[in-house]
Length: 112
Image (cartoon, rainbow, N blue to C red; front, side, top):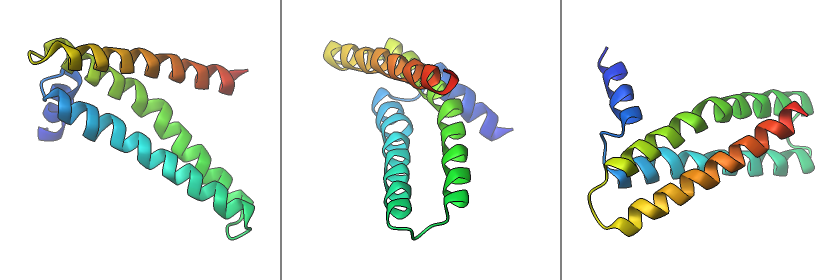
């Protein structure tokens, strides 16, 4: 039950913008990018089976499709509640807008 409360507080933007942005948005995105880079490298050098890499790619892409909107929502809510320097609020909102555009670009690429 405690995890659910923490999750809801995160989505509502109750955590600081720096934590929400760097730890729950940028770090997971970098980790997924590194995972795909490593997977691609292993596929090119034939150190991993194609079937396994396909399943792993599908799993990580599914996690990305589920996690990204939640992360963008949390950053947006945290930016709206931010009371510090207005520059950080504006930059966070720009990043959220770019993230939404990029997310829809990926979804359209998957569907069509």
